[in-house]
Amino acid sequence: MTPEDIAELALSLPEVTEEEPYGPNRPVYKVGGSIFAMLAAATRTHPDQVTVKCEPRLALHLCEQHAAVHPWYQGRRWHWLTVHLEDNTVPDEDLTDMLHHAWDCVVTDLPTTTRERLRTLHHEQQGP
Image (cartoon, rainbow, N blue to C red):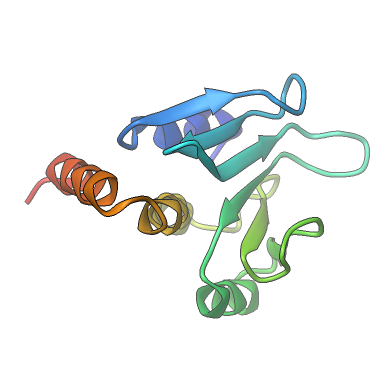
């Protein structure tokens, strides 16, 4: 999955906004005003990557399952994961699941009425 694919997927989720508070080529994706995913374009020191919010138990499992998945070096160690995108070793389906999970992690902490509305929208979007 390319960074463009990640951006398209993130923006397809209900009520997601894209901002660049950290500068160009470093967009963040928010729902309810909170970040759930961050993209970073390749530099001399790292490849294209996406960082997503994640439940700690799932984060540990994903790191064990994929060599391209690592705890985010700046965040609370097991609440954020960074996925290196350069070699496409993480299947698109797994990346899709990670983005949906990250979105849901943020939605879980929103007020009840907002959370229920967003989850209904997401469920309707997913279809039967």
